[in-house]
Length: 207
Picture 1 (cartoon, helix red, strand yellow):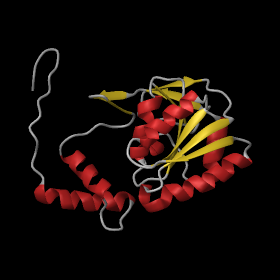
Picture 2 (picture 1 turned 30 degrees about the vertical axis):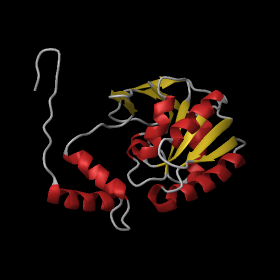
Picture 3 (picture 1 turned 135 degrees about the vertical axis):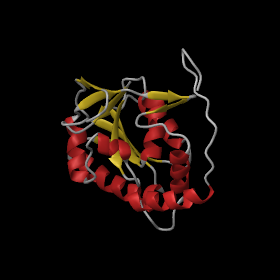
């Protein structure tokens, strides 16, 4: 399970369980400076100012490369922070989830990436003023976490064409962002995509 701070009306279509949570007074803000061409970095700076104005102590940490967000989250847990705010895209959230899943630590998502799938499901606002209020309120729910191999995931796991499109969008598609980047990635991926052979094993049969 994963404890998440979300909008009070979340979450549609996701398996959730209300959790009492508690006051949020100290957070670690994990910022991916390259997410969405610097969008997360700008959002992180504005959000930090709003959180401080709300009386929340903020320890701001900037990732230096792949895997850094997981290590920074482990540090936050060791320091007893009330929550970890993942400021970046779904990739940044994914790394934070590796350390938070199965612990009492709470996740808050600051949508600074291209797609921000989990943030949309959690009804998290992109406006830093409203987002700071959501974090301060600390409305916490527990959501299911999946496992693929050794990796945990909090939204979706894909393979085949969907994965090829995501990988192409992650590498960058010209200066495009958000939905436009993924639509362009769809077109580019169609040119060379070859369906993979997949074997699915269950208790009763193998496909």
